Amino acid sequence: MRPPHILLLALAFATTSPPALASSANAWAAHKLEVVSQCSQASGLKEPRLIGDLIEYDDRVGYTVALIAGLYPQPHLRQKPGRSLCLFDKRRRTAHAAPADGLR
Image (cartoon, rainbow, N blue to C red; front, side, top):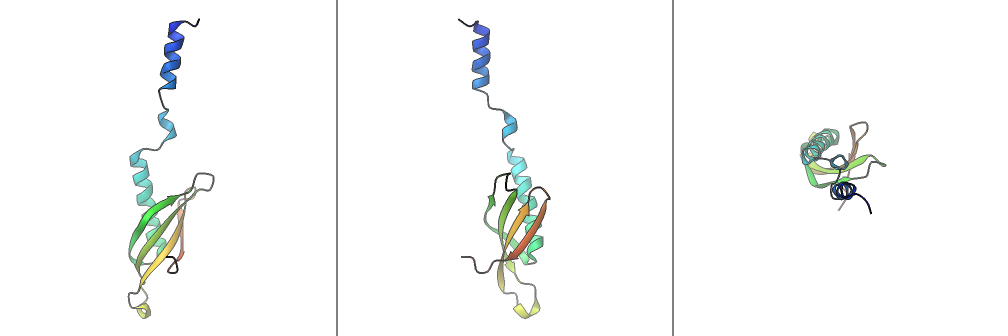
């Protein structure tokens, strides 16, 4: 039979989850702000806003996807509404956007 202190130690480890495995709510909020800010700028749209939720790919892929809506700034488009699909590279912390008006 094992000594009682070994059993208590094993029980303590089994019921404790390591805090380093999950990001804090503050870290996720800061990430979202960065993605929306970078993607809004990359979209080139006026009055940009996030549509829906961010799509988070795992760290093996390294991207977050955002759909941004706003108004085209070009005078000949006369403030026409538009959408942009943005890929945010988590490693480089850069955003790349492309027109996405065809998405439904």
